[in-house]
Length: 304
Image 1 (cartoon, helix red, strand yellow):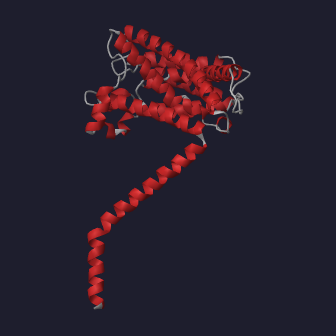
Image 2 (spheres, helix red, strand yellow; image 1 turned 90 degrees about the horizontal axis):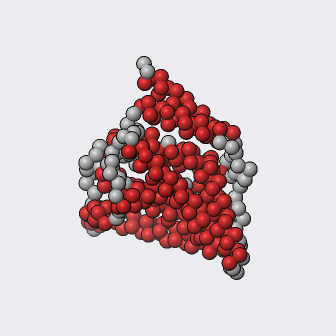
Image 3 (tube, helix red, strand yellow; image 1 turned 90 degrees about the vertical axis):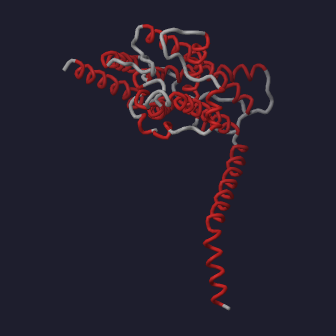
């Protein structure tokens, strides 16, 4: 009798172990989702920032996935070969999503209204993915009026949207002169060296802002009026202008690494987060020195 019970238990575990394990995984995932929902419910500012950042990164991943069937990952820039999962056939749902949204920018010498819009969206996706994370600091995550924070964030994004227009104009110029290839990467080592030297020099020589990187104070009151909202919007504009001043040279480095280079985006996001929030000499000047040294080395390789 005992041996029969052991046999039944043994057969039960073999037949249902995978099923039970799958159920446990689903329950654990559900519990984590509920936990995150309660966490974001308590901190709406963080929920807004994380959502915008996620939209930016998903959009950039979809861009690359849309072009991998006709372009190799190495064409998008150094380090991209590490993302081999992007070369696999996407699920049908993802394929439908890719085909339904405006992706990427102009890959040729001629520009249309559609390609112009795609270019602006590409740059704006980069801003959401790389520059919104600079707001992930404790002072911006304290309890405040959520409407005030939203107005502040809108002002911040408006400044970076203006930078997107500048980036698109520069992209058009580089493509018009044949410096930027069809994968949105500078295709000439001499041009890359010159870009490194210019951007590094700008990073070292640009004047410091007295307010960098201090954070504005947002309204904590639940009462809102036009004056308070206007102040919050101006605070967002000021914070955006400060971040553009600190980080725009490194954003332009993407022309050398590749405008669709996700690996370079991650690396530069970390650096710009430090630059926007910690105005020490090493953080603000170090990237400039590194770019100048890289430019000199590229020039040396170009003439050897």
